[in-house]
Image (cartoon, rainbow, N blue to C red; front, side, top):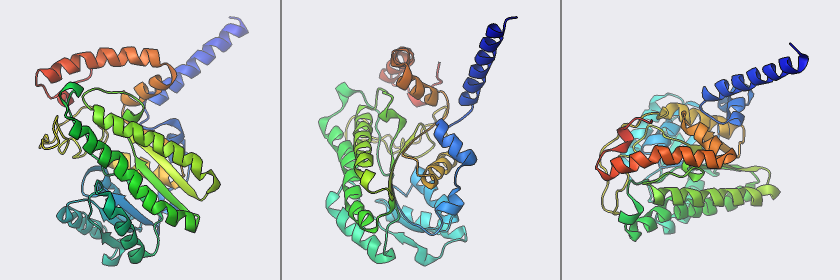
Amino acid sequence: MSWSLLLALCALLLLLLKLLCFLCVDGDLTLMWSEWLGRRPEQELTGLVVWVTGASSGIGEELAYQLSKLGVSLVLSARRVHELERVKRKCLGNGNLKEKDIFILPFDLANRSSHEVATKAVLQEFGRIDVLVNNAGKTHSSLIVDTKMDFFKELMELNYLGTVSLTKCVLPHMIERKQGKIVIVNSLVSSVPIPIASGYCASKHALQGFIHSLQIELIKHPGIIASNICPGLVHSNIRKNMLTEEVTKTVGHNTTQVHKMATSRCVRLMLVAMANNLKEVWIGEQPYLLVAYLWQYVPTLAWWIIHKFWEKRIDLFKSGVDVSKTKYK
């Protein structure tokens, strides 16, 4: 066997090994590297003041629990006060925080007139905001042709404009202090298109453009980190509360999707990203992560795969089948 052929076989084996390793991970390679060899959240985040929106369920709720174990000061925001109180009690049950360390601040993210007052309330309570986690949002399940325009408007008001508004309220404070972290919980759909959720996808695409521009504008403020967190499917109540084709209609029950990531694992990776000041991370179970990579590097191939995958599922959706419960083929 010639040396050139041997080297070629070694290179092929190395490529196959890398592909196998990639298929076993649930985050982008920079995030995985940071988890294995980077800074630990237990050292980097302890003692910070962290404001979490959408903290009454799903990712926001789990984030509150894991942050409470790190000994941070928490600001918990959502619309449902009783749910925030429930989350607070469970956080206190972890034993690392006292009553004074958790501030319940209910408000509606879509009501932009309340954001400045809410920001002042946090500053009055804790004196500073070290981390703002923009997590609140809604999704939906409806075809474009059946979706009312009011619905698109509501999703943009909440998912996009609400997040932009709150960020703008907190940003001057961080610029004055010359430090802080702004985290936007985006989605893999901000890069990879999916049907039956056009309004949600559009709002996440808008957030993608906003956070990327913000990151560039913060070049002159190196102490302020803006992070774009893009999870795939995660176990949460977002689908229970998702809208259908009209703003007054919701699904009203949880759906069980295959290939969903455990919320606790997603949040742990988010904390790793925050501890290591990562500007963009992708989180998700396979095959979603693989499709996201294909969409970036070989979009024509990715488009063919997505087309084959979604064509059948659109037909199922039209026939009234809950496509979230169907297996991926």
